[in-house]
Amino acid sequence: MGGLIVPRTMRLVLGRCLMVLLLGALAAAQSFEQRTARYLESVRKQPPLLLAFVRDLPKGGDLHNHLDGAIYAEDLIDFAADGQLCVDRTSSRLLAGPCDSCENYTAKPGVRCSYGDHVLYNQMIDAWSMRNWRPGDESGHDHFFATFDKFGLASHTHVAEAIAAATNRAGMDHLQYVEYMHTADAGAAAQLAGKVEWNPNYAKMRDALLSAGMKDVAAETGKRLAAEDARAREFLKCGTADAAPGCAVTVRYLYQVLRGLSHEIVFAQILLGFELASSDPRFVGLNLVMPEDWYVPIHDFNEHMAMLDYLHTVYPKVHITLHAGELAIGLVPPEDLTFHIRASVEQGHAERIGHGVDVMNEKDPIGLLHEMAERNVLVEIALTSNDVILGVSGDDHPLPIYIKYGVPVALTTDDEGVSRSDLTHEYLRAVESYRLSYADLKRMARQSLEHSFLPGASLWTDTKLVFRMAPACGGDAPGADKPTAGCEAFLTANERARMQWKLEVEFAKFEKKY
Image 1 (cartoon, rainbow, N blue to C red):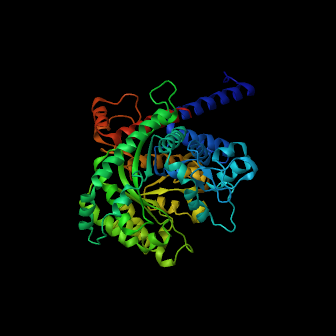
Image 2 (image 1 turned 30 degrees about the horizontal axis):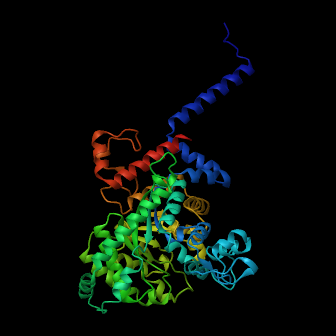
Image 3 (image 1 turned 180 degrees about the vertical axis):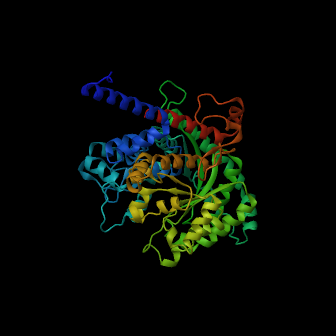
């Protein structure tokens, strides 16, 4: 008796059904992470869909964020109008009152006049940011750094509003944690330095500043910032049904030293940074800021490293992150490109480096990369900032080199208000420029919290090749809805691990969408 003959149409139907079942089985076998990675690959060449993907991506922390530069010009105009400030119509620099009237294009109108004068309004936005800047008589570098003197009166008198605005944008950007660089003492350390005779013996100089009242400056700075933080949360309506996204973001501060000032002021500010980070939990470390290529930062660079080296011996537990290598060929003589990153790590005791753009100009750059990987020194990568200030982007940027040599990296905003960017667009730029995978993005977000200066132990015991959880949580799936009792106790005791677990929870939610 012959076999059953199946009609061709039925064979096709059965074949398709088997294919569907097979594809379904393969999809079920894939992890949520793998499916998310596949989705990223599918939209890599579709910018609108790629933007939506990276916007919703959990991003962990922003470790390199200058509070003054984080504010968009539109907010700064509101701050200035609220403070009844005036603006020089020619330079767009803010001035104290009294102001001219709004009529007839006066030279010193009140900032409020800009609400009815679109030419003035747009002029201020362009002068206070990189919007509409084009290469010409003024470099991107000079235009960028000139903005701060123009809008400074508004940002310095509206700190709580600035914290609220920047933190809310971070929350909307799916960030959990931000470290703001902020010179929070309102010039008190500089004033104290003026009362003490400079002594190149750092131990004696520290004693003199402490005797003159440095601890009182630290205490007053802490009180002032606590009040500003409380007001910022009020602006965000935290604790109410109308709480803004920023309420979910944890904020800490790095005391911001102005390294372009005289050596007695720089030392006093560095000392204040160490004192604050030792006594006030809001301050988790310090950084040295101002353009690295300006005369004083270049001329006094080794002295600044020596100051940090000495004070690190006195305050060994205080965290240090340093701007270094925010330079490019032609901006400074070649010899000044050869040692800043290495010196910041070896003498300045930096646990993180901000920018690190000129790393391949350093002496023995490959050796330095190996050293940074071995020491686990993270590089805070600011792609948009490096492009508009230094003109370094694409294949000229060292981000892929750092990744190749195992140096941990995290994407940061730097001055997102001035640059007219946000962390979402930093991730977008990174994906488009360097074809980063989903695993790369997830690793950078995790590294941002791993290298945060939050107190406590890490959720991870290994972050080199794979992320391996600490023994207390080793039996838990990352991001599980309910950790085991031992893991929960570990998270309760360690703020850094707790923040990292929260990121894993967010990743689990994110990946389930794909």
